[in-house]
Image (cartoon, rainbow, N blue to C red; front, top):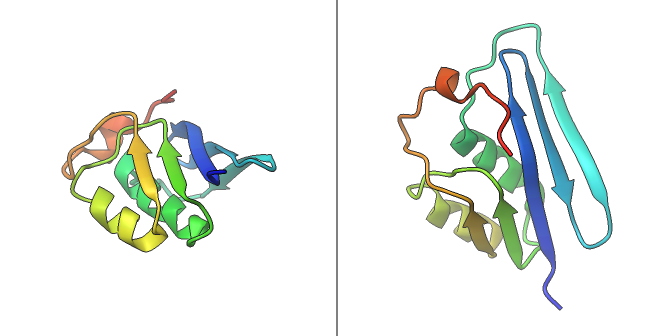
Amino acid sequence: MTSRIAFRDLSISDRRLDVSVSTPDAEHHLWFESTDQLAVTTTTMAVALSTLCGRKFDRVEYDFPVSGEVMPAIRELTGADVMASGSATMDDSPRTLSVSIG
């Protein structure tokens, strides 16, 4: 059986990040709030979230766009098959992505 983790319902706003996480064992909701404005893209979120995976999962899924330029690095870091629901570019402005995705 494949061990899978899925990150979905990503929401990026000026001062808060939210994402739902699904594993075979549980559902989680992660969030981060800051008093300072956050400059985050879906790609930088994917990289940050991949560090939470370690090498535990055979498959990592993002239901948001991730730059194809970082996908090989995420695959190498996690040792997993990595899927995203689209491709973003590395120069995507954080402000253009400050909407709820999913």
